[in-house]
Length: 452
Image 1: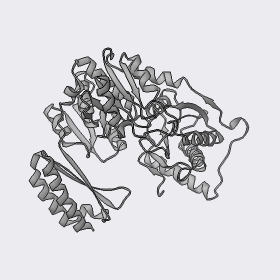
Image 2: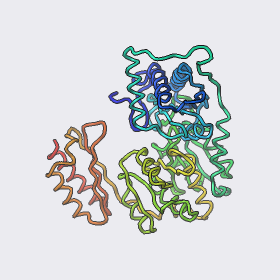
Image 3: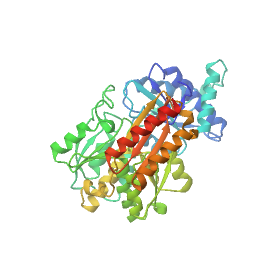
Image 4: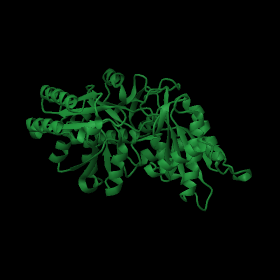
């Protein structure tokens, strides 16, 4: 698997890449590293452990709980809940550590282990590196200290976390959702109970699909990565709009009443204007990645708002938000972070806030999302090239400059080396789809010529 920790914890095929032994060992290592860092000083440590409904989550949860308890950490098992719920409960319960077992939008055979620091925030890279180093040292025979007697951790179920989290979601809504009919696609995932409960309590009439997880059907043809069922259901039921989550419900995408997709950029544009009206959009600034559509940037500029762009990955968005105190950020894929109310992307919270804006204004989601025009975007993956030379090839730089001159102010070029594969991603946006395809094709050829 190379470096164990990726941008969102440790992921792999459960019981092949990610085994029970690995989950247990990483959990013990995390406990030791946090103890050495002083996180547990002066008190008995506590961890919150949650998971999505994947079948493999059952044995991985057992392994994580065993590892933590064997290292002297008391464990609160919150059961099947979204990643943002585990983050919220880690913070509100004053726990020293949170652990979420999920592979998010990945297919069912995958799973993952994500550690959260006190307060429900993602662990720093440095701590992840230390956890991995301690895990590897132990795996190769280095012993570690094991508590005995009353020093071992105690384990109990904490099922009241469900109601605490739902109450939190309802409590931060600016207004109720009475009069709205909404279809919810839960991806047979972690929000299958939470999201319908929250929308119902907030006053919406709901129709649910993808809300019957059996451990095997998570993300299977439904949810935020497969919007076809949601589009059909919204039209069939004459709903005002639809909301789709992924397996661990840290994402939210939407579908308007005509069945048209509303992506993360459009959702952020709608929420940004709503937050500005409430004086909640600090510095009138939104944070997004370089993959956001140029139409998003142009829409914010027309509204007098600023867009700060980061590298791809919601962790980089969050880092920028925390560093500068910004309140709203996210990704085109539907990871939206509302930092005043969540420490990570929260799909249910995002959907509720979007619904609140529709209810408050009396305008359709289609009309609200129309504040932003998505420019045609073409993405081509160019395989089998030397991705390391993207930034220092004179031939490629000349091709990019020529493309940018042709596109002018209404287009954009982005060349991005893959972080895991020997390929380069060519992304081109333009006012016209044919122009975008033409420019992207020429740039893809230039990449092959310069880096092949």
